Structures are given as structure tokens and as C-alpha cells.
Length: 270
Ligand SMILES: C[S@@+](CC[C@H](N)C(=O)[O-])C[C@H]1O[C@@H](n2cnc3c(N)ncnc32)[C@H](O)[C@@H]1O
Image 1: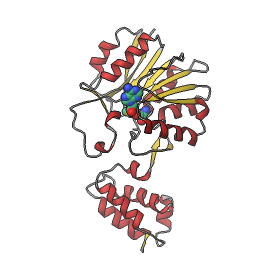
Image 2 (image 1 turned 90 degrees about the vertical axis):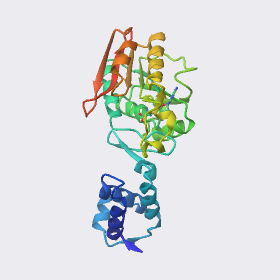
Image 3 (image 1 turned 135 degrees about the horizontal axis):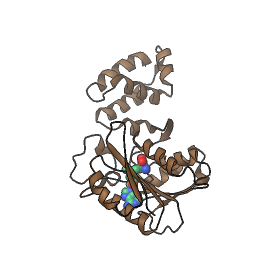
Image 4 (image 1 turned 60 degrees about the horizontal axis):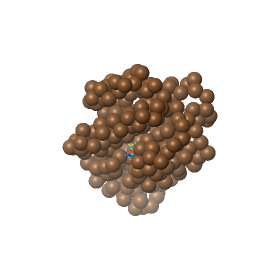
């Protein structure tokens, strides 16, 4: 048996060259393996724990598996969500999409929201938390995503506000709505995915040959169904081609992320 501080040193050394923040990740994995907080790991450094689980986690990380899949947890919009293999890991940039939706629906009472591409449910759950008067219908083609999203909705006690449906786009959905929100797959087919991205489901990342195919379909759906507002995340190099697609809208505006790159757009369709 090794002490927590010994394990922290071994773990940090093992992750050098694999993780950018080796010590930080070793702390997270040790915390997950021991069930102690990161503060306890430091303050109770002499305590001994069964190291097997920790070493297994370190080995998975050394093979470039994302730390979120190993711990089963991910931080999003300052909350801790559940996360699991087979479902996309939510990204910090997507918090911006939520802020844009909140702005668009600010003056709408009891807003009805449709999300395309639930994933882990972070968008639907956060909108439900931040707008308790909202009703949300969220779709995904991945059954595993729907199961996880429902668990996250339960975790934050917002299941009553959200219906998760396993269907492509909004096929079979005829409810009225004020806004469609989506962070769809938007990477081009031939884009080389790095070792870590290869752990994530391909259908959550790849948006078609050009990458914009699913986004184009969503824009068409919003216009055909006369859904007033649309807010989507997109790729940093897709502004030009999507501007063409959004020409029929009353207005469309692209927004930028923390790195000042195009990251999405909002539009008023009618
Ligand atoms: C980039 S992930 C976003 C997940 C989550 N909303 C987030 O922001 O973390 C895209 C999601 O869209 C789903 N998806 C892909 N094609 C779809 C389609 N045609 N209809 C509905 N969902 C789709 C994928 O399974 C995946 O869960």
C-alpha cells in the first residue's frame, strides 16, 4: 500500500508527456479513485489507499482516453454533469451557445425550446435550470446519449421540463416552438482526428463531407417550419458558407468564442 502523496508523485510522473497538466490530472484521478476531495488528498497525504483502481485509471489516461470518460464526470457551466463513453464530452465553448439562447428568449414567457443533438443533455438541462418556465424537447439519434441526458436531467431535478426523444432532427415532432438550438456535428469528413478525439463517437463529431451538411438541414427545418429563432454552434471556418444558407432569414449574426474565432450564429427566421 502506498500513501496518497506517494501515489500523487507516481501518477504525475506517469502522465508527463501525455497530459498538459500532469499534476492536476493526477490529483483528479486520485480523487476519483479514492473518493476523497482534492483538498483531502493534499491534507491527508500520509493516508494509505488501495492503489489498484488509481493505477488502472492512470493506464487508461496514458493511452490518451479523455479524463472525463475515466472519471465519468465533466464540469460544464460551473456544474458537475455525468459523462460516459459513447456520448460526446461537452466543451466549454458551448456555454456561449446557452448564453445566446437565454438572450434571444429573454422577453418570451414560458418559452418552448427544441434542441437537436442532446448528447449528455447539458444544453437542455442548463436551459431548464436557468429558465424554470421553459419547456424543452431534445432529440438525438444516439440511444446512449438519450439515456445519459435523462440521468443528467434527473440529477438536476429538471426532468419535468424536458422530454428527450430518440429521432433524427425533429422527425415525428409536431410541437410548436419559439426557438431551435443545436450544437450539431460540424467537422468535415476528412479532418484528421487526434488520439483523444478518436475516443468520442464519430456521429457526434462529423457533420458530412464538408462538415456543414447537418447545420444546413437544421437551417432549412427552422425556415420551413417557421420557427422564429435559431441558435447553433458551428466551426471557425464555416461563417462564409453558412451566411449564404442564412440569406432567407430576417437577420443572422455570427458570434465568436474565447479565442476570438467564429463559434456559432443566431438568426431570426421570420
Ligand atoms: C456535437 S454533439 C453535441 C452534444 C451536446 N448537445 C453538447 O453540446 O455537448 C452532437 C450530437 O448530435 C447528435 N446527432 C447527430 N446527428 C443527429 C441528427 N440527425 N439528429 C439528431 N441528433 C443528431 C449526436 O449523436 C450527438 O449527440
